[in-house]
Length: 183
Length: 271
Ligand SMILES: Cc1cc2nc3c(=O)[nH]c(=O)nc-3n(C[C@H](O)[C@H](O)[C@H](O)COP(=O)(O)OP(=O)(O)OC[C@H]3O[C@@H](n4cnc5c(N)ncnc54)[C@H](O)[C@@H]3O)c2cc1C
Ligand code: FES
Ligand code: FES
Image 1 (tube, rainbow over the protein chains, first blue to last red):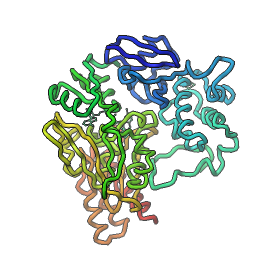
Image 2: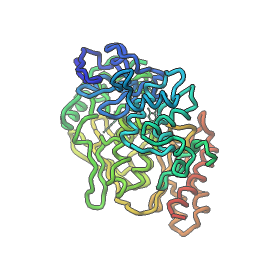
Image 3: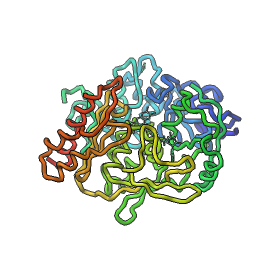
């Protein structure tokens, strides 16, 4: 069946099987290979893209569900290699990647996180990226990159009282994560 | 992993969706957020002939107050439930529990109705609605009916919902400032609960302590009789039938139910 969607500002359309996943529409139909498929089970976040501005795991969405939607992938994020989007730039300056496999999904998840929470605490960054796994970095520099992209000084935020406060209200998910500051 | 091929329809109205469902019955599957059914279809544990996408029906996507009740449309995304000021004010437990589901990407897609319909005993929101004392509203071409959540579930992945019925909305009492807490014990980030406990207004809902979400009836009765929290919480596993799996033995689940209930009751009491 016919699908149309705007991908990185371009109108795209194709005749697809309803069972085609959005990840494969992007990679195979359009040839946009930044979006990686890692686990294929909604766990790792490598396939994260923005659909109508919100982060979504494209291995768990049909292309036909994105009919008429606006989709953004890592390819469409920065104006040019010289003029990087602030999140991409911060991943570079803070060394937020090593092998790079998780990076496109991690960056798109971070863009969505910063739209919802423009000035996050360290905890909000870690929880906001809990759907994205990285096998290389140990996350620390990824957290720094997202804090830097939000216009904050990572050194000031990480380990500060501001960073380790529990969210208000009576909700606790345990075991929690290490904040790296003994809290 | 690729699902078995299927036909796909995206009706524009709820009535259109109900008519398709009535026509195709068990050969069709409804798709809302897709975050339970697509993984199952990718594993080929389900192979519907027709997928009816209700994910964009505006009629199912709303949050409003109606008298003593908060009403949330079945198609409302977890992210909306979590961030809605109306939900946060009228039933803060529901907003807080929605925030513990999976991860942000999952919450951008998954819906309250899908979570209740899927009837997974490890899901968070059914136990929250149970602790709140909510009602599930179902509609089919035969009419509409309201089922108290206490009568909705019949077993693992099963409920009294008929094949031609859709959940249209979920109604919960407005609990406002009544004490509440949610204690969810997971093995790692972005995961289902090994056990979780929802407490609000003296009612206790248990996640993953049997084939359906359960109320900790003995604990609630002890609290009503004025028992101290520690004594009431010690009864939390009474009458439950937790399973054993890779993450926990049944005994460990009973232990968790008691400990998490004590913590949740203590938090809810503001102590
Ligand atoms: C990696 C991962 C982690 C997750 N972690 C959690 C977690 O921690 N806690 C948790 O509670 N859940 C978790 N979930 C499940 C998630 O919350 C799902 O979004 C939810 O269970 C189903 O909602 P959905 O809208 O995606 O439903 P769908 O997948 O679209 O549908 C699920 C089922 O419900 C039926 N259905 C959907 N809507 C209706 C309706 N209105 N009326 C009648 N039937 C309907 C469908 O036919 C289908 O059988 C997780 C999912 C994934 C993939
Ligand atoms: S490939 Fe989609 S979450 Fe891992
Ligand atoms: S940089 Fe290698 S997986 Fe994250």
